[in-house]
Amino acid sequence: MNSPDTGFPITLTVNGVPRSLVLEDARVTLLDALRERLDLTGSKKGCDRGQCGACTILLDGVRINACLALAVSHDGASITTIEGLADGDVLHPVQAAFVDHDAYQCGFCTPGQIMSAVGLIREGQAGDDPERVREGMSGNLCRCGAYAGITEAVLAAHAAMNAPDVLPGGHLSEDAA
Picture 1 (cartoon, helix red, strand yellow):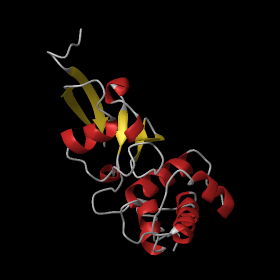
Picture 2 (picture 1 turned 30 degrees about the vertical axis):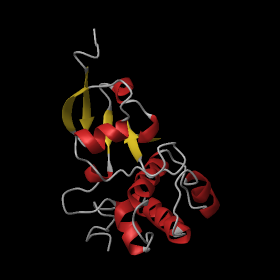
Picture 3 (picture 1 turned 90 degrees about the vertical axis):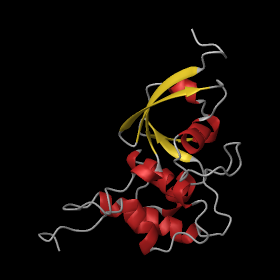
Picture 4 (picture 1 turned 60 degrees about the horizontal axis):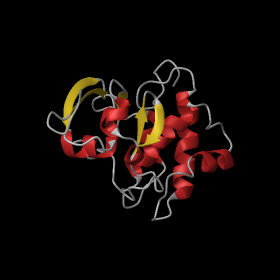
């Protein structure tokens, strides 16, 4: 049984790597566990209320606001953060599309925007309708106003990820080029 004296042990698979933690408090959020215990600072703490989306991660493949999720409630879960998205030096297609479409300005919201876009595409909610993308991404705020570039990037990434002969990074294979 867990107690304040022994802590709260949890195991998470983070970016494909099993990680074990002992939390001193059952109220530690996934965001704080990732940032403060595992030194994965890509997910940002913007509002701590689930209103801005800067902390968006994938939990068992589904996008969530990490600031609202208690770490102890997700013992055994698989988590993907922005740090685990690229394949080595090769950007994920969504990351590449954000670069190609200037879908960032200050960059603070970008990790959450990218993780939300990956989740949106995986959920089959992106499509080719800009309004649908804007609605699907409405939980992620950009205080700089880069929404047009973000929408274009999500549409381009969706197209790239659903095109035949796509290599990691969203680039076409030599056979298809």
